[in-house]
Length: 67
Image (tube, rainbow, N blue to C red; front, side, top):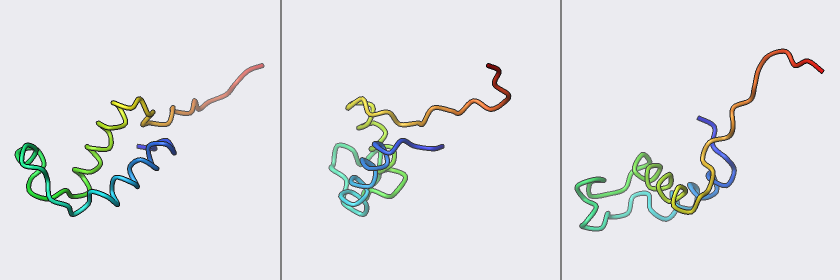
């Protein structure tokens, strides 16, 4: 799934900050004891939705276009 540049920037920053860090006690059931890459991606998607940052690039239309 191709992501937008704004989302990639957010994900890169969050990965640097949270990857391998301990999870707060109230989120241990959902994420486990340490954040891994998959958890950080889910966290970044949730944050992007909250901040209204577009996540997916729009799909390009393929085919013949007529004038």
